[in-house]
Image (cartoon, rainbow, N blue to C red):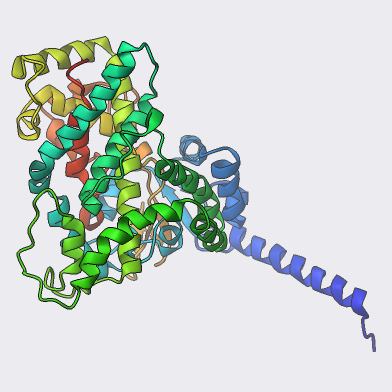
Length: 462
């Protein structure tokens, strides 16, 4: 009888390991329920390495690779072991109906968010409660209440721009927009601003650390087990020191945890309505007051989502308006007709009534697509029929706002920046196909704030 030595055991183990992966690859390529769908073979065997290559090694190019694959294979492409990418607006409509039963894919969302937060919660019932708690703090009514504070921050930014212009100093619009939106969203979420507008060159380490975290996020989505290591590394960096801004403020509310908080929470401008709502156990039936750690998680998620997506839309919008003189002139004439004096403030409610401004903002959100990547959803237990083929439960279906907002079946000349498309008779039909904010029960909570920021970003002085 052969008894292998140490080297023999090593060779045997390696052989078994290789055999396991060969057999697994054969199964995934030829016998898996998704094997009928075309796509890159390497992705069907192991989507981790495929995604890492396109998103991390090639710096976020995965969405463009998926776009190319759809042109090659059609509306359905297999982009992972258990993942299908769908580029079809009608399928997207069916998936995002409130009654569809589709849920967030926890494999993906635990890598880009914290569990239990408004973005990271994958349980529909718990998510519904958290959204009900936060909705009043992020509603259109709240936008109007904080409009003076928002305009005040815009004026502070413009004063800095004026000073730079007087001294012929070049400014970075990207940094300026990110500073503005961070000070606005921190006021909303924390009840106090971080103070990015006053920073030299608008460069703030909190924002820079967020940007650095996005880069490690590519690794986390491809290799989820590394996400824990990335979070630990972030906690050892200067990023954690900025959470003290939230810690100091929230201690007051933590002390009130066992006090009877009135059900009608005050939402005046010098308070954090977000924290007030979260700390009130009577806000919504079923709501549990979060711990300090959970409050930190929610605050970081709201700061991140509110800043990066909104500032990117502002930057894209300013570029497109300046780059399209016809759009610039039409928009300027409409603004000048409604606000003839440069000293007259552009109010949120008045600006919403301007048709060309509204159309321009919609076109910015369509083509700018602040969150272009995939938003995976899991097929419910009842299954889902796709083009006559039954798909099994728990299959991960990916859709991309970037692709949906450019789909030629809905948008004519989809790559052209054309606000006029929103002024045609069929423009109401276009609204339901705008995928920027998602749809259904999981649509973006802060879309009213995005519109408000866009209006604030149209600097009438210039």
